[in-house]
Amino acid sequence: MTAFDVRPITEEERRSTFDVLRRALHTQRVTDERWARVGESWPAAHKFGAFEGSSPIGIVSSYDTELAVPGGRTLPVAAVEGVGVRPDRTRRGVLTAMMAAQLADFAARGMPLAVLHASEPTIYGRFGYGSAALGKTLRVARPAARLHERVAAGGEVRLLSPEEAVKEIPGLYRRIGLHRPGMIGRPEQWWPISHDRPVVDGEHLVAVHSGPDGDDGFVVYATVSRRRFEAPDDGAVLDVHDLHAANPRARAALWRYLLSVDLVSGVHARFRPVDEPLALMLTDHRHAATLAVEDDLWLRPVDVAAALAGRTYGTAGPVVLAVTDRQLTANTGHYEVGPDGARRTDAAADLALDVDTLGMLYLGHWSATTLAEAGRVDVRDPAAPGRADELFTTRTAPWCGTHF
Image (cartoon, rainbow, N blue to C red; front, side, top):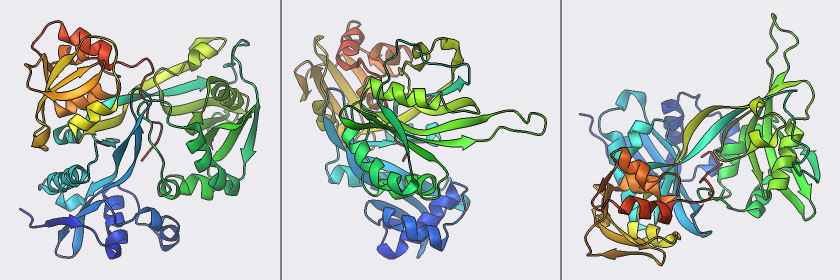
């Protein structure tokens, strides 16, 4: 067994731990030039490293932001952004120790929720995270795909220079707002790492939509060539990296723009909202194919009472949930959830579930009935899953829309 210590990293260890992460993710070590651009977005705060002596062998990282929850409120959330163990030190308890330290830190700081994107889904359920939101991958055929004439899409779309994009898009994302459950804030430190290559290096194009009240939507996309020796006339594919809009009209205008670009054989977009009605907006819905539906956002209640009290619920009668949390044992207990909110209770449980399943239920995508049928919820009252469905399920599908 490898002897190691887990502790917060220091300022001097930022770059070495960043290199450990990149090695774990099978990417090249960061160059001096790129570190100069992105280093400030890798602060020492909220990072725990595993060390053999002074040498880092693992890293877990997060940043504090806000998460939109059902009902229109936002709650503080820890966004887990960088998790990795050096390849020669895996399966030795390193990740388990680092995740335990990180969860203890979240709880000590009063964070009600934590979220992440799972590189390997089998890893994170054992730490209390559940798949809470999904995203779909779309492939739209061009030039056949056209928006229906009844789809309202006014305003103007303009391309930005890389310099304009760096200045304008962060503020535009804030103005658009967190209008779906699952969307998260993008703090200042998010932008350099996530948009360093696309924006600064000019690998992506950035288009902005302006409506009656000013800029209200944007799309970031890359042009990927499909031309081959055997098929020299194949057009390019537009690969959509980021598309956000404040309203359906702006969203439709951005899609109309993408579908109007010449010499393009298709548009590819990953992790779009599962209920985005693009196919129905076309004259022929078959020209928009859903290639995959994948887990997008994983959520962990860190303070179950605060998390449940922070969102709103439907109009059904209350249910009592028996929640089991093996890592943060203070969360284990009974909680009454109803139209008036949520609170701890000594009442008998109607449904019993682990904290990762509560994470799946929390944003409203998965119904209690479905989770019970899948064996993830123990039903004590046969009528309770139906009441829980009405309480937790949301009209709009949850969606994150931010890679971190």
